[in-house]
Each structure stands twice: as C-alpha cells, then as structure tokens.
Length: 415
Length: 63
Image (cartoon, rainbow over all chains, first blue to last red; front, top):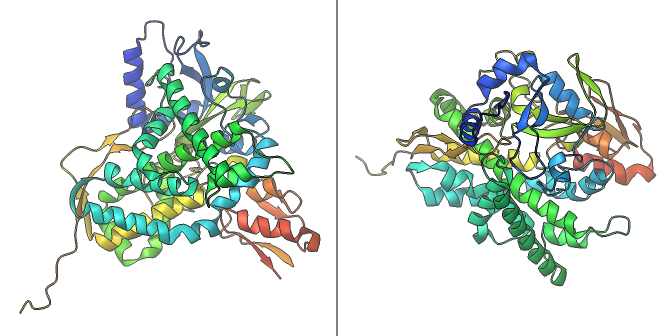
C-alpha cells in the first residue's frame, strides 16, 4: 500500500489494500523499486491518538539503499521511532535501540545465541521436531498449525524458561504485536502489551526468588559493570524474544516448504544430496524473506540514490524488496541455488544483524532434514494456502495445507 | 596467537568490528579487517569472545 491516501479512503478500503499488498508484496516492489527512495503514507490520520496528520515514511527498496541504511546506524537510528515516542509501541531493547545501550545489551545476550550454543541445542530441537512429526503422521495436514507454529514456540519457551502450555497465548500476543494499526486497533494492542508485561513480570519475580538455568534467570542476575538490568529492559527483552523467536522462524519454515512442494525434482535431489539443504535455506531467506521490513529514523539529512531525505524522517527499510533487486541478484524472481549465498539481507546487516540467525538456520535445517528423512514426496492439500495479511513486518502463511506421503511399507516376507 | 578471518565463510555482518573495535575494523565495502593480527595475552579474552560471537563462524584464533 505504497500510495497516497486521499481523504475519501475508507478504513475498509485501507484494510483491503493492505491485505492485498501483504499477501503478495512483490509486484509492488517490482513496480516501485526504481522510484525509491520515495515518500509514502505510512499510517493514515486518526489511526491512533497523536496521529492527526498522515504519518509519512521514506520507502527504501533498492539493495544498495537498504544495505547502506543498515550499515549506517548513526544516520539511521532505531531508537528514535516516533511510534515509541507517542506511546503506541513499547520501548523494546535491541531492535528499538541505538548504541551505547544497544552495544551493552547485545554483548550480554549474544552469548545465549552463538553458533556453539545453538549447536549444543540441536539434538533437543531435533527431538521436538520428530515428536511433532510423530503426532502428525502422514496425509493432509495444515503444516502451519501442526508444525511451523509449535516448533519455534517450543524452542523459544525452552530458552526463556516459560511453560510451553501457554503457547496459544504466546502466538496471540505475537500476532497482535506485529500487526498493523490498520488491522488491529490501538486499544486491543495496549491490552495485549499489558498482558505480556504482567506475564513476564511474574516470571521475572519467580526467577528472582528461585533461579533456574534459563534466559530470564540470566537477565535478572545480569551484572554489567556493577549494574543490574532495569525492569523494563528485562521485560522488553522477553517480549522481543518471544515475538522475534517465533514469528520469523514460523514464516521461514512455511515459506521453505511452500517453495519445495512445487519443486518435486529438487525434493528428490535434496533427499539424495543433503549438502543442498543449506543453499535451499539461504535462497528461501532471499526469495521469500520472512521479515519484509523494519523502520529507522534519520538523525541528519542524508542522500540515497541521489534523493535527499531530511533529518528526523521515518524510513521503511524493505529487506524483502532488496533481496529481489535485479541489480544485485540476476533473475531475482527465480529460486536458484547457484548464487553467492552470503549476499542477502534477510537477517539485516550491521549492528542489528539478527541475534537469532544461527537459531533460525538450525531450526530450518533440522526441519528440512526431518521432512526429507520421512517423506519421499510432498504435495499440496485440497484446502487453499492462505498468506497472513495483518502484519506488515513478516511474510508467511496463516494456513498451508500439505499432503505428507509416507515411505512405502516394505514387507520382509512378501514372497 | 593469531586472529584469522575465513573469507569464504564471512558474511560481512560487521558484528566483529562493532563488538570488538579493539581487534577489528570495517573496510569501506563492509569487509572486516583484523586490526591486531597477533593479540597479546591482555586481549585474549576479547579475541576468544570475538570468535564465539561471529554469527558466520568465520573467525579463528590460532595458537
């Protein structure tokens, strides 16, 4: 929905346009990319208190602009988000923060997400993956409900140290949090944030009383140069992890299976040659990026692609569009494994590079290997695949029916 | 002790220069450059942390 909103645009029209864009943003990217950086209406007036005028932002869709903005965190601030200043978004640590506090916090939590720590976690993740697949069996299944949602939620609940029985609530909290104000009104979002704050407040208090081997305990016991973390920092990190830890991976795995179900030859190749698993995951990240966009705010006037963006401007950084820029990726709309796998910006770039990237990659890899081990063939189900259409941040499925074809039974005494 | 970057693994995320500016800096094209190729004992802890925190597993510390 990169267009001018006229005074006659109704909320229903707006919701419908946003939904169409989110279900398939790629035609819009193709059409708009050459004209970016381009100012557009980010939020219509009246959508929330304090937004009386249309709220504008500059869309970046070229790979070079997106890359330059991500690398220049001094010019493109994450902390100065006007939605936080207006009290519409809670102040999250890391993702809505700048150095020096960002640096301090990133150092502290990074250690829980290193390649080595994730590697140690892999056998446990694989057990959960196989448990979920045992429950599914074979035949037609909505893979989103039965697998791509529960796996990441169980992993992140395990890391945080929160009871996984609450996972339906976690999913509702996450979906509401990342939705557009156009789709879910402010009042409902505030209630949602309040529920999360109260929940994690109780969890943090419990860990203060009795420590455990989990992230919440690490946070309440953290000592940075003689100082402990403030309550809002602890809650802000729990909320960030809960959301970032499940929405993104759910969509990565869903998008990957959706790509592969239409490529039976590639599926066969993968079964025979598992060295293709990594390239498939990386190309999925580029081709259908689970995180499509995040915002920044300029701290000074800046020129990108010859266009001057003023100081204090909101900027929408479209990772999804950058990853399909033909200037950077020849034949960008083709899913190909012969590219340089390291060039996409699906996990961002620079100081905010996704903290959970090693974990997301591990979950995708374990999933793909488990599916390849169990199912010689995948086909589409009879029910339609449905994209999510409420969150402008992520790209993925709300429903993805697949038929999982089991291995043929072999009988030892068949003759 | 020698700090080495495996260029075939490096994704140029910039995390090493961000978290350990005493050991790394970033070239204009985003590539990391080792500032202190042979860190002394006083930088051992920092160097080991840099190896651990690289999201691409591209940094090694050779004894």
